Length: 278
Image (tube, rainbow, N blue to C red; front, side, top):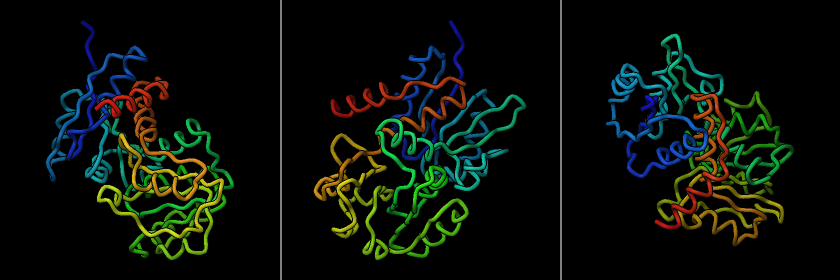
């Protein structure tokens, strides 16, 4: 029997993680012999658990909430994009015994929008709702697509302004409260808040979207999210959820670990069908 390299995703909660199914599909497609499991890690125990995993021969870890900053601190080296994001979602055991950290969330988002959905980012006016880790993790890849402008809005305006300042060297980016949206029309609106999980939606102006606007929710589920329903009601040209981003960021991790890039579209379809059947 062929020995299997060990991988895992650490998080809390982790029970409903789709990562094991996604990486199993990648491995089967690419003829890679790996073992991948979801591990619940208790708060305050990440450093010990990660050290134990790699000491036991683990090859790579995905890291989800609430441990992305712990993973950043754990890594011996981090990529430039992870350093700017201040967070790591992918840890890789290197040949010299060191652990490399990277963040693949932003790449996953951009690849889903551009390659899968066929949306154009260059020269577009983009607005992001929220100023937490999800936004911080995707700003650099978004700005490197050369949009016309990026506006970050948040209930705590100072957090959005601080983020905008951190990334201002990469392009035209502005941050503040939701009142910034009142005078804007945007080509792409990205929801990076979790308000929809509580059945809430920020009040957004009716004038925000044009007939060619695209709306993207980082959340996903078997039914359209609250944000997606709002977008459809406001005549958005195209609406999508974050399942493609989830699969694409996983594919980038898989590529870093195995040097093989899986085809993502069949896996996105597989995950979508599994959610609908559940």
